[in-house]
Image (cartoon, rainbow, N blue to C red; front, side, top):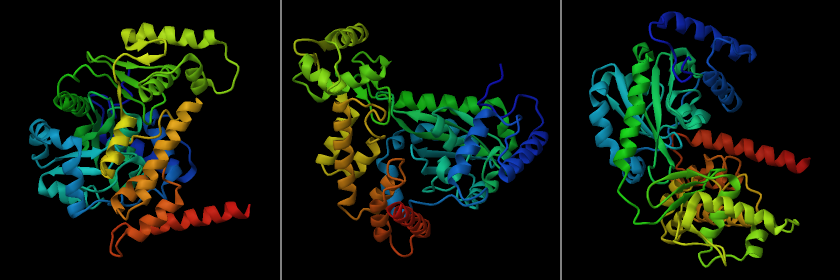
Length: 420
């Protein structure tokens, strides 16, 4: 079976592949039709890119510079593994033909390292620290697409959506927090056509796994953790290190019980899960029975409660906000709590957390915090945040023009809706 994440099979002709993909890219840009010779992972990325980008040739925006960039990356969890990444990929990055790049979960380049001559070439397309290389801002590219799909991927030359990037080939793999499973960012190697073989994809995958192993800090002291932000199915990490992906209903139950350590009666839990709908008690009991088979002694009854405290990423955000660490809270906030859940108790928890974090973002003039919120999927149409961001940016900020244009489009959209 052909590996869909590889750009080319061993022995394929890079020049021929480049011509084929270049023609397919031109056809897609002109009429929106994707050739069957384009890999599905690339075709889907082209469609996502075309839906949000102004055209097939543009510069990725630079969002963080100087002291702001230094502070952000010093505080980022991936700073801990940079010595390891340099050890594993440093020789490649110094050979005059490749770059080592590491980005955060939003696609912001934190480190771009390698031979000075190669870096100068990459600077011409803003492949630099502080630039935004997720798909929404840079189009199809290995680190951005790896983040979008949460999977290692290779992007070859003319498979890039942005024509300015098509001289380059790259391979990237996502890096996760080994305890919570939260996406932290991606590691990437970028260079010429010689990176199109299977070796480069295998190399970044192995490097990402080594980074995750290095991030492991030992046992959690017997305290399980629940990651439910930005996930429809929560991830439970047990005290003995097992990682369990929960069903949506089990995710809701554990999130509710973790937030109510004193426990909930059957009626209270039923109301939080089903609202006023007439649901037979046996339905809830069956769900709890299935959950107990999965988590064992973690779940107790009379009232329904957890036998030991379970740390949640939602509670981490609350603690960071209480401590005044807004940047930390924004980094931890991977998205709304169980975003597709319609359970009344979850909807209330989701709304309260998002509202509190948003108020904290709006409550100051921290352009970095405002930018993080505005560029997130839940903040991309938040006109109030975009207006506050525009006011907070200095007149000479590099991306002020982009922010002003986005704010103007949102104002026009909201005005039109008001008229309608």
